Length: 479
Image 1 (cartoon, rainbow, N blue to C red):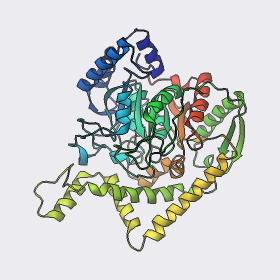
Image 2: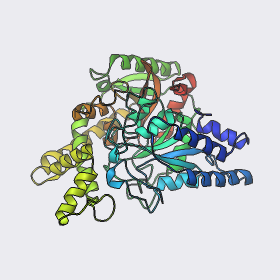
Image 3: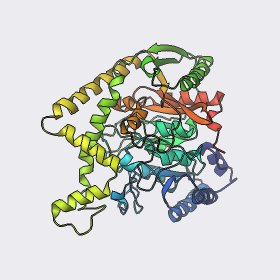
Image 4: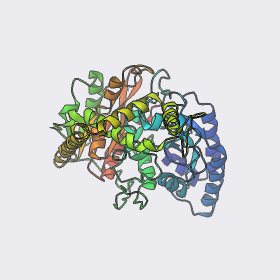
C-alpha cells in the first residue's frame, strides 16, 4: 500500500478492501517515521475526523471519486485553524483564519488532509534548503536535494508518505522537484487553479497544481482543484473538462516539437540520452517529431529574476511585524520594529530577492530593468505561441542534471538560479507543463518536460498517461 496510487486506493475503498480511517492511520504512521523532513505540520486529529466522515459517505453512497483519499498540502496554502508558515520564521506562529480555495475544494471532494509539507521559504528556491525548518532530503539519496520549492511535496510522494500532494510553480517549483524525485507533477495554465489563499511570491507567475505518482492521479486531483473563483481576480472563467476522459486516447498523429535551444551545452549528455530514449517511445506510439525554435528563451533567466523579485518585494512588504507574524523583541521605535522584524524574520534568499526587486522598481531603474524585462517576457510568450501553432506539444528537459548534493550550490546563488533554466520560461508565458519520470542516471530519477497550449491540460495528461502505459519509470521507488 505504501506506493499505491490514488486510483488504486479509490478502488480499494469502493470494494471495501480498506477504509479511509485505515488509510489515514497507515500513512500517518509512515509520516512519523519519516527521515526526509518532508512535513512541517502533521494534522493527525483533523485527518482522523475527515477520514471518519469519508467512511460515512462511502457507506451511505454519497462518496465522490476522491472521497477518503489522503493528501498533503504545500505549506503555502492557508488552512483554517492550522499553522501556515511558508517555510519561514516570519510565519512560524501564524494560524490561518481561513482556508485557500484549493484546500476547500479538496476537502469538499472528501479528501483527507494529513498535514502541510516543507518548502523553500515563501517558495523562493530550487533545492528546498531555504526552509526555516531545515532542508528536505531526496528519498532516492538523502545526501541530495529533492528540488524546490515544492520539495517537501515531491519527497513525501516519492517516499510513500502520501499518495498525492499539492504544490505551487512560480519558475518550475512543481516540475523540477517532481523530476528530481521521480514523480509526476503538473503546472496548469495560469488561472486554471485559484490562487486565493495561496500566499503570494510573484503574483503573475504563481500557480498551484497536483503532484502524484502518475498522470492518471494528477488528472483526478486537478479535477478537484480547478474552476473559476470569484475571489481571485486572476482566475480564468474557463469550463473545466473531464481530465480523465481522454487519458486513453491513442497518440497516432500527435505532433511533438523539440525546442533546439533546450538541447544545448547546458544539458548533461546523459540527460540528453535519457530524453532521446523517451522521445523514441513516443515515435513508437505514432507521434511525429520535429525541431522548433524558441529564439528568445535564452533571455528567460534575466527576465524572470527581475520580474519575480520585483513582485516579491511588493507582496512581502505586508510582513512588517505589526499585524501578524514574527515581531522582534523590545523595538525602540516603529522604524526599529520594521527593520529588525523583517531582518530577523526573513531568511537570506528571501532578503536577497526583496533587495533585487526593490532596486529594480526604484526611481530611475524601473524602465531600465522591470519594464524591459516585461517586454522580453512578451517576446518569450510569442515564441511559444508560434511554436504551438505548428505542433501539439513541446518536449524538453526539466533540469540540466539529476538531483545535486545538499549544499552543492549554497554559496553560489547564480548557479542555483541556473537550475531553473529549462522551466521558468513556461511561467513567463503562463503555459501548462508537466514533468514525467523518463529514466534514471546513477539511480537518480530524470524527468521529461511536456509543454502544452493554454488550457490544454487534458492533452498533456493524455500524452503523459500513454507514455506511462508503455514504460515503468513512474513505478520505480527509492526502496
